Image (tube, rainbow, N blue to C red; front, side, top):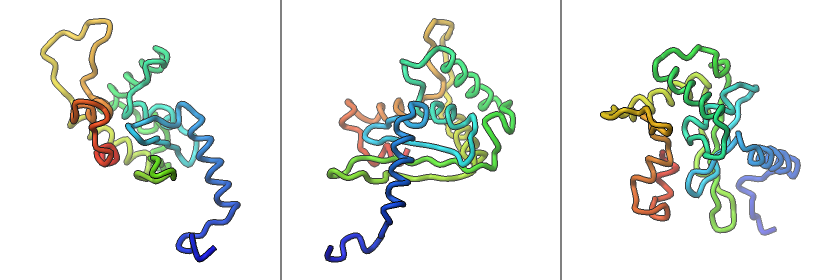
Amino acid sequence: DNGRGANSPSSEEAVSAYATALDWLLSQKDRHFRLLDSSVVYWTEEPTPSETKLPWMIAGVPQSEDVQTKQEIKFILEKLLLGTLGGTELGDPKIQFHILALSLNQGRISTRFYYTGSLGEIIQNVKKHFEQLRTVRTWDDSSSHPESTTPIAFQLLRQTSRDIDGIPPQLSGAL
């Protein structure tokens, strides 16, 4: 073994437990999304509505999702930006919320970032993020597919390069 892995040893039981949890998170379409070369997974320490709603506010609801899901996310975002979102509407603000981004690196999985904070902190950060990015429209948005006034993460990244392959991976992690 020559001492390999001695700097951060893990038991087989621990490896099995986190691999099983990660496999489950990645198998749930409402528990992860892709951001360029990273897979982002998220969870709360207790079940909350935020686990299936909050990340789509950041990543955007996939085109394949149903109209009801899109309307729910839009409604929550509007309430968040207007300051009318109830204190526990997305769950207990004291519950811990976890966000983990993983990417492949030379055949291994590497952690791009890991963030944990209370649900209340996460919601306030998302609100601040969207308030700072909100655009003012000078046209009527009564069309059947109005553009959002708050760009999602991928839209921001897409504006930094002519094509998707030109977006620096460090930028997606920082965003």
